[in-house]
Image: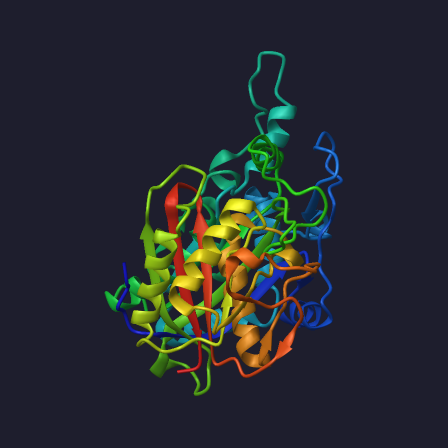
Length: 396
């Protein structure tokens, strides 16, 4: 499916992950090739796994009026909203268009599951969850956009997207539809997902967790490292943004339904999503492909096949999950922010800790940073159930 909707300007964006808090820290980590993965310190987890944890979330306080939303996921969202003048940019948009004309569309896959895990550990002798557990304002998928809308003082439409690991990227497509339909003049998009035991145990049961830091695209890759992140962007019509603003040039999505947890081996759904995004962007070439690149044997091989089918060996590609881990429903939003930084900095970030890329991919996998002109980036996101999404980000 190609959105075939008008391109949108991205006048403000921000990101928080294990690689850094805010764009300056994220940019510095990319250039210095300093990853944020570390051994998992959660009790009861499998030996040898690494995660991308955001430090200091325990000290982040929500506004007192919104304290009922308190959970790890919303603390991470709060930390993200405080960075890079993002909340101030949204306030300016609300003053310009009206608070009721700024929508909120956010992706998440785990939402506040960690809060439910903590409440379950405190259940009473009768098995009942503690009285102070507030599912609606913490765990529920809609709690995230509801919190962000309230925190930013907005009154427009708010909705959650939960399409597994494409959630954060998919929020950009939904924003295009809302603006094209006249339901909003600007949209806060993005994704937030935090570490929880359920996710770690689940991926471990599928035998997909790497022992050590993940190594996407490596010939000896052995699985994923789970991370947590918050990524936000403000999008609006190009004519409403300052000249020179980075632009969402095109979006594409598909659902191949090949398998609940395994990608189509030939990447048919991935190819469809990438082609749709390129068509929506006017068929323009791209200078860098930010791979979904999780580090599993099957996913990376599939994506190599898909990228080769479209670009051959002519476009450099890499995965940035070696810096952050796989941040699930936030990954598409986080990597959209990284794509924008790559455009601004003329940077192709080479995969971390990869000595030998898998020769079976047959594509140009960057393993060291390259300082080259980057006008447009194709950013891929693929999820369980055959959900596929691609974004083209660059200059108009």
